[in-house]
Image (cartoon, rainbow, N blue to C red; front, top):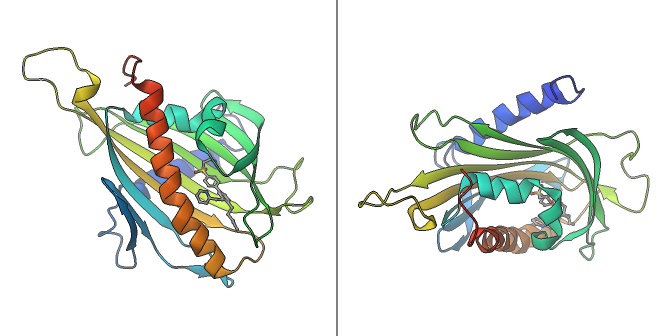
Length: 240
Ligand SMILES: CCCCCc1ccc(-c2ccc(S(=O)(=O)CCO)cc2)cc1/C=C\c1ccccn1
């Protein structure tokens, strides 16, 4: 809860990340280049390096019919579903339950040749926010994942190179009520998903390898994840 040592950082980072996610790819200046398209999904990246390491920020926008922002965040945040949709995940451990909407994770991801295997420690927070651009519309739901230190799991102590990431999944639900006053069904809802991520790969990895991994893995991840949510929710009542 709000007494936890990470709470001030969680509050600050969530607000900052949601504001960034709301910025369209046009508004936040030049530099965003479209690198993948599939139906309603558009993926952009900026080519950035920090100390000679590729840390290309990524922003993906996708519109998916038949699911809500609460549902998308529910399946993204809760650990019990993660092995179903996160294909590069080798090991996931919940290190701490900070509160019912905040968890501390340790994840190791499958090694991607020729780079060495990576692991990451991050807090994950799920939150509902009023949509200030659409007062009487449904709320925005978001999950923010942000790397943090954990004294029990120091970086680079084992076989894995520690990576650092900030991820924001922001979801805006749209309801188009049926003309005849019938109850809202899945045919009347869609979700605009904005996924932003910055991953610092930690130790050295060839820029060409990293960019190839991201180009291949991000579109696959977002398509697989959204298909998973549609499949999990299709026969369940709507979650707003
Ligand atoms: C040399 C290879 C270095 C990259 C290895 C790697 C590190 C981290 C991550 C990763 C990606 C998404 C998250 S999350 O959005 O928070 C969801 C929770 O799992 C957390 C971690 C992945 C991958 C490896 C592959 C890869 C890269 C993009 C997209 C998908 N897979």
